[in-house]
Length: 349
Ligand code: 6CS
Image (cartoon, rainbow, N blue to C red; front, side, top):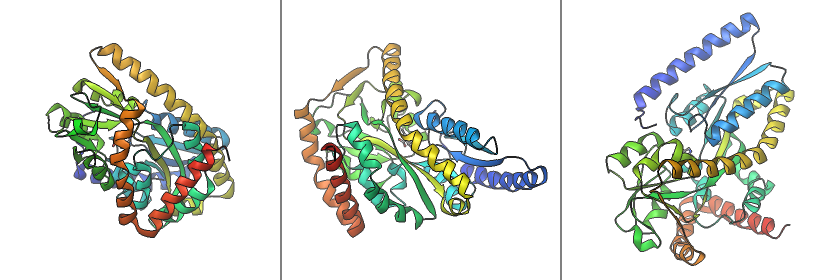
C-alpha cells in the first residue's frame, strides 16, 4: 500500500465515522441490535495486528453469545496511527493498536520500548517482562492521563533494516537516509549510528523509497512484505536492534463504563491472545521472508554476527541517557523497572 493519506481525508473520515456512531447508536436502541466495538489497526489485512484483531473479534463474539460485534478497520480506512489515537481519545473508536513508535509522541515514556539492544535476545524473557506487573503498574497511569487505557503490550517480531547497500557496521550507515516511525527518540537512535533519519507515516514509505527520497527503512519481515518495501530495496539487514512492539489501547471512559461481565470477557480474551499473537508473528515473519525470497531471489539477507551487533550496541547505549533526560523521573523509573524485569525473566525468577 503506497497511497499518501492526507490529514484532511482522515478528518473527513473521522466526522463520517462519528456520524455513523450516532446513527448506529439510535438504530441499536430501536432494534436492540448487538453492541458494536470499533477496533482500528495500524496495519493492512493479513498482518500481525489484523490476525490479532480478527481472533479478538471471534472470541469476543463467541464469549458474549453474539451480543458484542467487533468491527475491525484496517490501516488506511481511518487515517494514520496518529489519527487513530485521536479518534480513540474522542471516543469514536473503542479499541486501537498504537505502536510506541508513533504513540511515543503523546506518551514520551513509552519510547523506552524503542531503545536499541535493551530487550533480550530471548523472546520468552521479553514476553515475561512485558507482562510483569511492575511494568504494567508504571505504564497504566501514563495512558490514563491521556484518556486512554492500556489493554496489552504485544510483540510483532524483530526489526529488520531494508537498505540499498550492505550495512555491517555503524560507519556503513553514513549518508543513508532511513525512514523511522514518528517518535522523536527514533531519530536519535539512527543519528547515533551516523545515518540521516527521517520520520514519516507508514503509508508514505513505499513512495518515498520508490522516489529515492529515502534509501532505507526499518520494520519486521511481515511488514516489509505486506507493504511491498522489498520491491524497492536490495538488502535485508538482520541486526535485531529491537523487537517491534505495539500496544492495544481502549478509550478510558469506555472501559470505565463497561459492564463487569463484558470487562471480564475483555480481560480473559486479552490474556489468551498474548501467547497467540506471539506464535502468529513468528509464523508470519518466517513465511513472509520465504515468500519475498521466492519472488525476488536477488534480495540479500545479511545476518550480523554478535561482534558486529556489539558495535551498534556501543553507539546505541548513550541514547538511554538521552531518554532519561527527555522523560525525567518517570522515564528513568520505567527504564530501571524494565531492566529489572528482564533480569528476573532471564534468570527464570
Ligand atoms: O512502520 C510503521 O509505521 C508501522 N509498522 C508496523 C509493523 N506496524 C504499524 C506501524 O505504524
